[in-house]
Picture 1 (cartoon, rainbow, N blue to C red):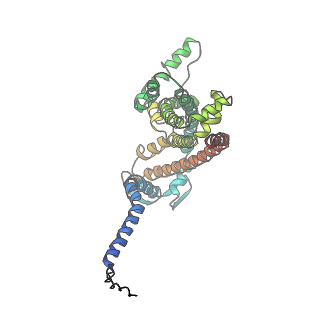
Picture 2 (cartoon, helix red, strand yellow; picture 1 turned 30 degrees about the vertical axis):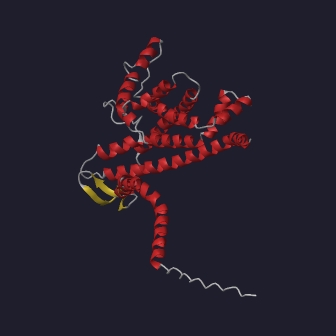
Picture 3 (cartoon, one colour; picture 1 turned 180 degrees about the horizontal axis):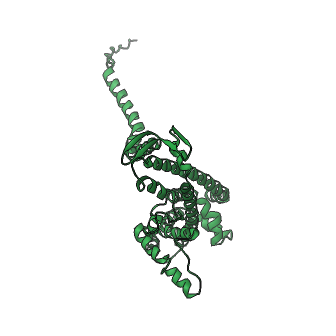
Amino acid sequence: MTANPVAPDKPQTPPPAHDDAHERRLRARGRRGRLDVRLSPYLYISPFFLLFALTGLFPLIYTAWVATRQWNTITGDGGVAVCGAVCGSTDPSIFANFQWVLNQPAFWDALRNTFSIFLISTIPQLIAALILAAILDANLKAKTFWRMGVLLPYVIAPSAAAIIFSQIFSDQSGLINTFLGWIGVSPVPWHANTLASHIAIASIVNFRWTGYNTLILLAAMQAIPRDVFEASVVDGAGRVRQLVSVTIPMLRPTLIFVIITSTIGGLQIFDEPQMFTQGTSGYGGPNRQFLTVSLYLWDLGFNHVSIGQPNLGRSAAVAWLLFLIVVAFAIVNFLLTRRIASAGGAPARKHHAKEVAR
């Protein structure tokens, strides 16, 4: 019996030296990577917010400060605002300009006219845009031609549209009054009558903006899955039933967007009543029959300026009141639209979920 030779021990490889510098570089690289992931999105969108702060937020805050002052475009800042004889107070107050504006009958006339024109223009405009979008979403020949055609009025300059409609709604020799004369109907005083002037101005607004809203709603309609419409046809729904029970509820985000933007634009209406004036009857008409809040703001701040009249501060107060009204009305419209669309959209979404599950 011989003993097995014992293998000599292999030389042990010494463990690598602990590289602290390398680990620090790895940790620093990881931190930079996490920081890059977190901050990059904010850096990408920061140019917009910087521009918004310069061109949007700063004027808003500056206007709020001017609204508390006796500010004149000729004499400049005259100190804290005073309401004066209208309020029976000579005490300086940061709310004095707001009190002065709220005591002006012209402001309430302008607010009434603004809401009237807004309702007459926006509601028919959105209904027409929805119906036109549904028609353009059907299987038509020359789709691109029809879709571009509805956008043409939006391309026309507001002044050109106002000139055209001023001829159509002229009191003496307008197209509509001429036609009414042919059938033995008395001419309509489009510029003198309050409701008639609102209808004429709303016609200009509808002419320009219906096509724009139509294309937005059409783009949203085409994103709706076709199997939802096919399922509704199988269930026996006609075109009208599809529009009411399927299309409108599934357009909820787009409808909210269109309604809110229409609300903002409708309550700030300026171009159409300004062009409708024809430069002979004063801004908003001799009896303020189509004076809007934006027109009153501009007229108050820049047309009736004289030394000693702090009109620009009062005009800024009107601007802030209009801003608050628009925000409040947009929130109400948003809540109503979301509630209506949610109530009507539940069956359609449930049906769509079943189809997807199959």
